[in-house]
Length: 126
Image 1 (cartoon, helix red, strand yellow):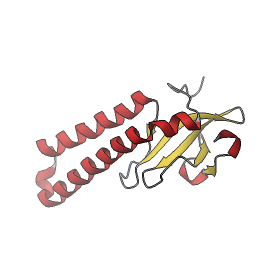
Image 2: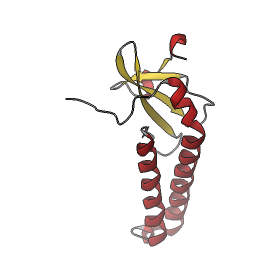
Image 3: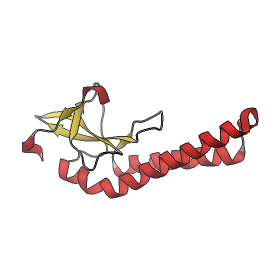
Image 4: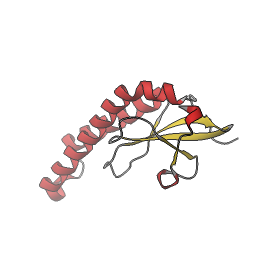
């Protein structure tokens, strides 16, 4: 049956969510960075430390919040804040692809291509 997204976004709809998505992604990156710093300071004592577990639970809640909006967090290194939005371009299901350092959504990729397969969104979809 394949991938069944919760929502299919137009470029305009995805762009309208960016203020909220950007805030959530910023929170994800901050929480993961703080837990990483804490883990480095604590060393072996970091494993299962309540403060780190709490931060990671918060990260998971934030990722779920993105999924509730209908988009997907894709940056598992927690470095650039990458988010995909299901969309249709040329009659095909694709992902609009946004990084937290971009001011708007300019790119898309095929479902299996990922970030390295990004292409510029055609003007007729803007």
